Image (tube, rainbow, N blue to C red):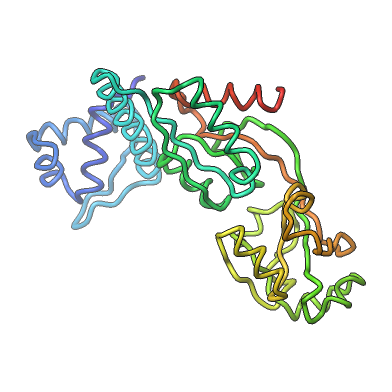
Length: 295
């Protein structure tokens, strides 16, 4: 059984346009052609995709197929755009989202080396919090993510590069510094956690909801601003071990490893949407990273 992209395109249009007539108008085809395409899918799958009535509603199988259609047609469109660029003599684009720590410590070397090896490749690079990298890669907005893996990565193909850890830190300027140095977790209930992203506990390797261990949570995407705020005693934050060792502003921070949730192990690497065929530009970047980390 093969699902044709023309059939998926018609089905997606019906869902997005809210009906067969508007879908036909959007696709510039006859309404009967759209109806036949959807009927063909239902015959192949031996299941209804739509619940017809005053309003079209997707069946459970229809919902699953619609998600598949969106992914397949987005990839088809991206491939066609890449081919068009290549036919015009333009190179592919490296589409990459990376974390602040990767950007701070490794991106300058990686991107310089990549440019030397691929001088004609265009680059589209964004620094994002880990949670945002996940969503951008999953949606297809960017092709590759480079940063810490989250707990649930089943939707991605992953390439581990190295292991690291994050540690809860406090500055001597903090009002409750003496208690925190002694590992007093009750003092943390009186201070904000300053973080780039903290929400669903399933997104963290900790079994507890970290936000419940502090007075509140401030989300600040800028790494340099988070460090400054902690340095001024406004709150506490989690910082990568390598950053603590090498960033001058972190020299006086106390690492609260005595706190039961004071450290978080993490795996860092590349990831992309499962089932996606990587572009040549992305494959070249993967190969570079594997050489860089001696894999």
